[in-house]
Structure formats: structure tokens, C-alpha cells
Image (cartoon, rainbow, N blue to C red; front, side, top):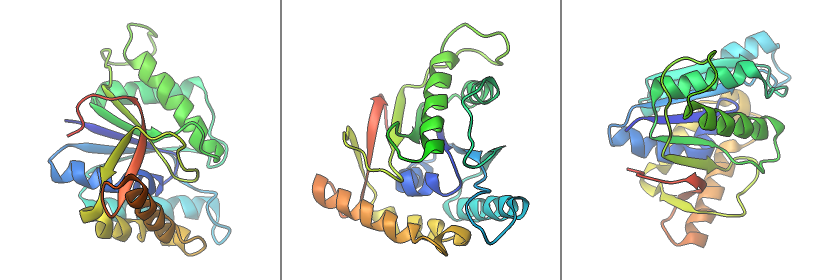
Length: 221
């Protein structure tokens, strides 16, 4: 089972679905993470060029801890992600190349603009990837059975799938803490832990849980 995670910035993947990613990896599922931006606007301590290098290095360090072999950096401008042909084609080609059965994307009501744009790009790319259209795209049509939307900046109002990540929470936090350029200013690790604990309590599915909105759902594990 192939898994694709599409994240607006490095660390969004871990915050939103890091525990679920670990579960897939433990089950032997090949997993690819694609970052729409490299988060070059995420700190005033560095130039954009230096921060791009730092954040990509942090993402690779986190991936090494979890055992992720493939990270893809599309390097759009952080804070200015555009819904355009170039980004659509790149995502369509990626979907057709990796042929994922499950894809994780941000949800459409996240307050961060880059997250909402990622949702719009990903959902349209998924629609087009499954059809016999658009000669500029590569590969054969591919339809993804399970599309799960994760929460980062804004909590989901409607939940349709819950993953108990209790056993993976320590490793998820260790991976998030590799992003020192970010948690130096905002405690994303603590925010993620608190959200996952809240979800565990309110769903009754485990001590720590990740919650998703399912746009379509087939086989999960």
C-alpha cells in the first residue's frame, strides 16, 4: 500500500498526521512526503535562502527518525503558494507516478492560506489524475481510494476517521522537535501533543488520537 502525504510546509505533515505516518511505516507501507513550500518565511532570524536550507535539513532529520525514505520539496514561495497550472501538473504527475492508495492533505477550512491552497491544489489534482485528460500531464490515470484531511492550525468541525496514535506519540514528538527553527518561537510540539490528547479524550478511542475528515475512504491499513 503506497502512502502520499502533501504538506504546505515542513512540520505540517508531522503535526497533522505524524502518528498515522508512523503506523504506515511500521506496517511496511512505502510513504512519500511532498512539501509545497520549504517554509522560507517561517522565521525572521534567517534569510529566506538560509531558512530554506535549514528547514529542509530539519525535515530530513525528522524523516530519518521515522524511517521515511523519500521527501520531495517543490519549493514554492512560503506564504504565496499559488493555485496554478504548474503546481497542478506537478501534483498530477506525482500522484500518477507514486500511485498512492491513501493520501493525506490539509482540510479546506484551515485558517492558513497556504494550507487552503494546498487543499485546493491537491483535490483538483486528484480529480484530474484519475481521468484521461490534459496531454501535458505524464503517466496513466490513477484514482486514490482514500483521501484524509488532517488538522494543523484550525481544528476540524466534522470528523469522519480517528486514528489511535498513543503508542507512536513519543516518536511523533521527537520528530516534531527536529524542527528547532520553528519550535524556538512557537511550541508546536506541545500544541500537537495537547490536540492529540484532546482528541483522545473526546473520541474515547485512545490516550492520543489524530482525527481526519475523509473525502473518500477505502482500505486504511
